[in-house]
Every structure is written in structure tokens, then in C-alpha cells.
Length: 159
Image 1 (spheres, rainbow, N blue to C red):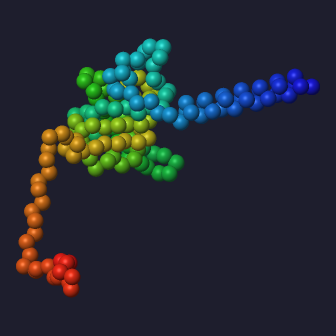
Image 2 (image 1 turned 60 degrees about the vertical axis):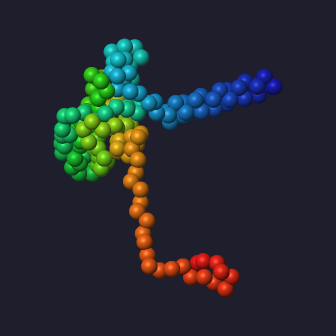
Image 3 (image 1 turned 90 degrees about the vertical axis):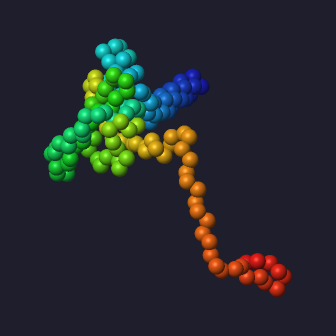
């Protein structure tokens, strides 16, 4: 009878372990530069079919907006390229692009790599590189001059 309990407990622990490992794997996003992504196309360890985060720069080709029919109506799908060196990935995205989205700007795209060189995006993130460049100093704030003299209280402290 104890053998049955041990076998049942081991089966339950194995199932729980499998669920934990598979949920962790599904919930994580791998960060992949465009060159690494494209280098593995056609190999046995290709990224096709996997959810990942692609990092690179917005390509110089203009963004194309294509209307696409969905269950909820017509949506405007954005098509653009993410580049790094000579490697390129075509991206399709159905939400609004960030305000700082521009050619040559750094970009991070989360989505599913559906075919070699093609990514179906869920999130597009950019940042304004001028805000983060080293060596730029902000201009000093000019001090305002006023004719009002500070008041003194009964103890001689200024307020």
C-alpha cells in the first residue's frame, strides 16, 4: 500500500514540475539582436515559431500602412523593417506606433517570429536617443530675480 502512495506522490510531483518548467518557458521572452536571429535561419535551432524580443534599428524604408479586415472591423497594419548591420527583419504591427518611432532610431519589437525574416509584432518600443546620449549637458536654469525682500520673524529668521 505504501508503494502506491509513493508512486502516486512521485507522479503528482513530476506533473507539477513539468507545469512549472513549461509555464516559465512560455512566460519568458528571449532578447535577440537581428543579426543573431537571421544567422540561425535555416538551421536546426532556428527561432521560427518562437516568441521573442528583437532589438535593432528602424530601417530607412518608409512604413507602409495596409488596411486589414478583422473580426472587429478594418484595422491599419503597419509594415516596417528592423535592421542591424546588413541583417533585416520585416515586421507587421496592428497597433499605433510610438511617437518617437523614426527611421534609424533604436527599436525593440516583441512578437512571434512566424517565418525566416518575418516577425508578427505584439509590442513596439522605442526611445529617443538624444535623451540618452552621453556628454550632453543640460543648460543651466537662470535664477529669477525679484524685488521682494524676505521677511524676518520675531526671532530674526528669514521666511
